[in-house]
Structure formats: structure tokens, C-alpha cells
Amino acid sequence: MRFAVFDGDRLGVVQSEDGREVVIDISDLAPADPGPAGPLHRLIEAGVDTAAIKKRLDARPRLALADVTLCTPMPRPGKIVAAPVNYRDHQVEMAQENTVIELGVFLKAPSSVIGPGGTIYLPYADMRTDQEGEFALVIGKTARNVSVEEALDYVFGYTCALDITVRSSEDRSTRKSFDGFTPLGPWVVTPDEVGDPRDVSLKCWVNNELRQDANTRDLFFSAAEVIAYASAVMTLWPGDVVSTGTPAGVGPLSDGARVAVELGGIGRLEVNVSASRAVPYAERPVAGGKAHVPLVTA
Ligand code: MN
Image (cartoon, rainbow, N blue to C red; front, top):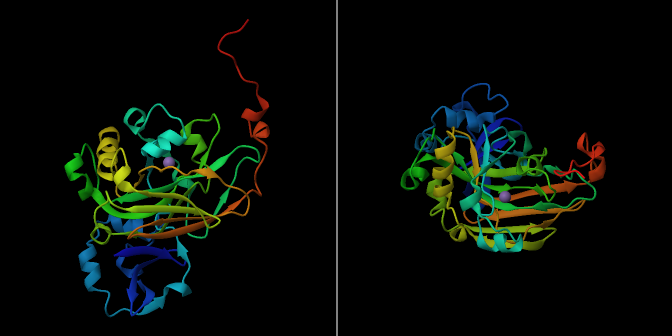
């Protein structure tokens, strides 16, 4: 099933019926008062039985997908765990000595999430900011020290992600955590509909130029391995998001760009780019006014 959040805080299941895409409103099946985490997050935390929901879809009215406004399905994940340098071709293009094997995982701010049609605001006018198309998943139940073999049992579903990144000297968690830097969506697809997470195609376009064309079979750490590794460090909660890393083809974004990421069997997520809030890097708040402090002084 494809679980979507639409028209603010409505919860829906998206289906293809007679050649058209429809949304079935199941908001009443989620806990009342979804709060800032949204109705899907609340449903996952409540221990949803997706099979039971599937049985309750037939009698419900259908909305045309084109008539609703899709929002991000996970507006406030507890945390966003991400994998650096997790594809060989991206390691080569970035000339990185170390991969995820040496680097481990990093965290992105939950406040960086936006949804379909949202806007990525470039923070700096003169510092490169790149798109990174990624295959991501949503944790379905608390995971602590899980093995690679059992890791996929902890997945609620899969979604498209962009890990937007400034190429500055700043720490990864800074460079990747600006508001708008984690587009997620357009929905979360349950594992039964995705099949093998080690064989998912990934494509990413900027202004209709295909920049990234890859498959998750080439990940150094598979989705299961990222979960197992991360769960040995930190407890993963229901509704946490794990993004598995980006393949080669990252590149700079500019004002007015349209970014699309598409995952086979999952969907396509599109967002916009704006430089309307960009400032010169040398004038960035606080740090821009301070001189570099050398380690060794004369
Ligand atoms: Mn990334």
C-alpha cells in the first residue's frame, strides 16, 4: 500500500483503479489529533496493522489524486539517519578516501523535511549546494541492536528522499540540515509492494536533465545493513527515517531549478529551488564575522 498525507493532516491510501490514481481517505483509522508529527507517524507509532486497513478500503469514497494536495508523509521524524559515501561511483566523483564503512552514519535535523512541491532555499549565494537523490525508509517498530538478517522486519515502508548538501567546510550535520534540505515523499510504500530493497532503480533529474541513474544493488551498506549498523549505535524509533546515500551525479542547484527523484516501484518526488534567501558565505550569521583561528601561531 501507498500511504500518503494530503490536504494538511489527512491520511490516505493511494491506489491505481481502472487506470486512474485515487486517494482513499483513512484519516479516521489514525489516532485522533495527529499533531506536528502527522497522521502517518501516529499510525505507525500505534502499531498499525496494514492488512486490516486494506480490508477496510472497498466501501470508502475515492478522491482523484489530482484533486488533493500531497504533503510530506513524515513531517517530523524523530530523527533522520543518513549514510555518507555509500556508492562506489559517488566515492570516486567526490575523491573520498573513506566510505560509509569508515565514516558510519550521520544525522540530519528533522526540521529540514519538506514535501512534494516544496521549496529548497539555497542558503549561500556563492557556495555550491547539490542535490543527492536517495532511497529512504521509515522505521516501523523500535529497533536496537538488530542483525542484518532481521533488519528489514523493522521497516514500515520506503520513500524517495533528497539529501540536499552545501559543499562548504562546515560539519555534515550543518551542511545538510538547513530548512528544506530533506524532501521526503510523495508517499510511503509498504515493503510487499517494493520487493527486494537491494534492487531498486534510482533516477534524479534537475531541470529535466538526468543527473543520477543507479540501482540500490550498488550500495556498500544495503538498507538492511544501514539499519543494523545504526541500531547498534542508537535506538531507532517508529517513524524515524533512514536514508541510504547517493550515487554519482550530484551537482549544483540554482535559483528556479526543479528537482525530481524517482525510485522504481515507489514513486516520484518533485521540489523547487529558490535563491531568494541566499546570502554571501562570508556574511553568514555569526561565523561570517569571525576570523579563522589557526592552530599554530607565529
Ligand atoms: Mn547523502
